[in-house]
Amino acid sequence: MKNKFYILFLFISLFSLTNLWSQTITVCATCPVKSIKEAVKQASEGDTILVKKGVYKEANIKIDKGITLIGEDLPTIDGEEKGEIITIGTDNVTIDGFKIINVGVSYTTDYAAVRVVNSTGFLIQNLELEKLFFGIYLQKSNDGKVLNNKVRGEAVTEFNSGNAVHLWYCKNVEVIGNDVQNVRDGIYLEFSDNITIKDNFSKNNVRYGLHFMFSNNNYVINNTFETNGAGIALMFSKFMQVENNIIQKNWGTAAYGLLLKEVNDAYIKNNLFFENTVGITVEGSNRLEYSNNDFTSNGYALKVKGACYQNHVINNNFLYNSFDISYNGRINDNKFDNNFWSNYTGYDLNKNGIGDVPYRPVKLFSYIVNRTPETIILMRSLFIDIIDFSEKVSPVFTPDDLLDENPKMKRINHDRN
Image (cartoon, rainbow, N blue to C red; front, top):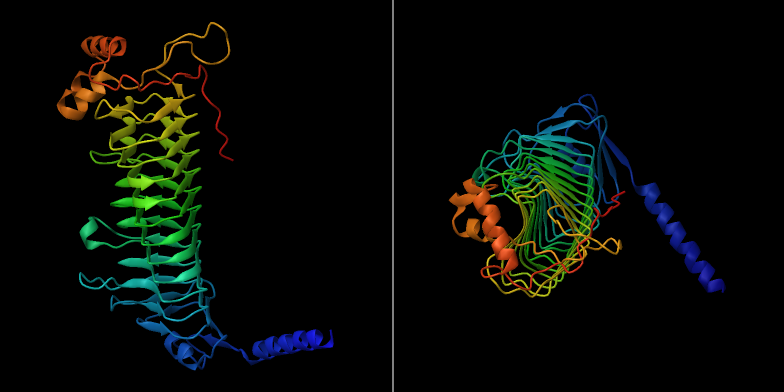
């Protein structure tokens, strides 16, 4: 027992000595240390650098010690378009409270406002990034956090712009509370696993609000993706959870709220898809569960392009979409059950809240439009109503077994609080 107390006492003593040895270096125009680079050079492991309000024209600041860099009253670091501004290459670094502007633009190098390379335990928070190429670029870095940053780009096309938050070969990272706008992709993940994307606002981005490639076991929760080239693109990934998001007004000839391409074993739950050209486009994706979502006023609510098997579409609201479900072929291996369809005209004689007549959500006209888009001008004409009715009575072109056997008579209340 005495040995245990001795070891505990020794550990506490060493921790206290470390705190005593650490120091705070203050940077300002009238301080002995006038530049952030000089402060980093003087700092030791565990030190804090406090940067006072002002404008610091510095680029290529390389942090190779586990230090804390804090801005007081949001000082500005102006990179003067000379390239990368801050590069972190070690563990346990915190960057907190700066405005960073004028990242260099290159078509051969992905310059970033803040780059984190081969690091763990990092914290990047409370930054305002403007006039950037890439914003926060995480490269082979794990167990860190990117919190409450504001990114404003000036992207016009995807070819001359970068991403706001970019993760490449990362694991166990939290990306929470960020506001990213007017860049190529708001948040981009490639070969990155166990990432939490939560409480972010991604708007007016040229390509995607959120983009995943070859990334597994990730969580997308409580975000808003609005008026992007397209909302979310999940590609070549598995074991995903997309829950409680608002995905709206992603409108255009090639726009959609959510793209699922070769995604397997995922949950799409309790999301709002509102006024998108296509709510969800899905291709080559299996064993997905779509539940408790609201598809409201979209062009297409759910567009299935093919090679999709063992998916469940359960307890969703399909409200006032031009087309609820679109299928390319006649083969169906997916289950539709207990959804509410605003176009359902059946009856409920036993008053149990379930329609007595199954609902067939795929219309012949959607099949025709898929093959000849110009025919959309005939929508809502009497001729279209007649052919849709004929197909419903005797399916020829649409899957004859694609039915919701238990359509709800009343809209389902989905609590998103």
